Image 1 (spheres, rainbow, N blue to C red):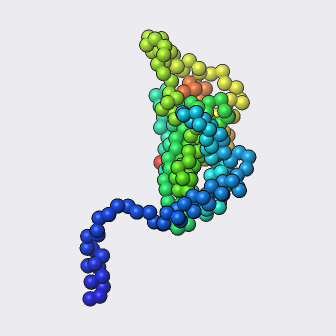
Image 2 (cartoon, rainbow, N blue to C red):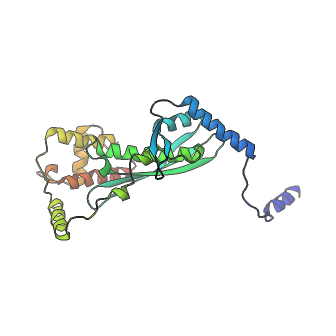
Length: 258
């Protein structure tokens, strides 16, 4: 009977009121001041960058290095809970990541991050670098939302969103169409040396879908559906880029990679 009464009270409509702070004003101010003191005492070279906002004011933004310190000293765990790849019509791709940061008291916050491959061209392993930047953005956002008092990370300032960086249609329509057809027909086929292929196949290894360069060659041929006598060198750069994305998606569908 006592249990029934307790349940009845629990099921009664609760009074409606405004959302109130979990702590007193003094406690909130103390927590903020502690964080500011932490920044001053623990900061080191590379923890923050200085930038000028739209109003011409000098401000600071924490880097990935500072986020790592926050997770350590606040006891925060951070994990990737979602990851996907969007392949764009021009053959480039966007890696989208969602991270979850959890505090010792159980409070958690999600953060998302994305990176467009075009912003990483010419900087080494294209897939690895694109994914790494997306992961960094997602983790930074999650951790800073949890403890950073509204700070924006350096990765949000030093690079722009892929939507803003997509190429604009500045050339005449007829010329743009002709160029698109040439690229689509594989104008850049062939002429790749051993170093180029080693770098390309290393992307398969870094993505976790191949054990080594030789295995990556096998995975790529299977994804392309090539028959005896057909060569990967017959594919254009754009088609090879799309092939890598397809191989990663196939591996994920089979549960071979997370």
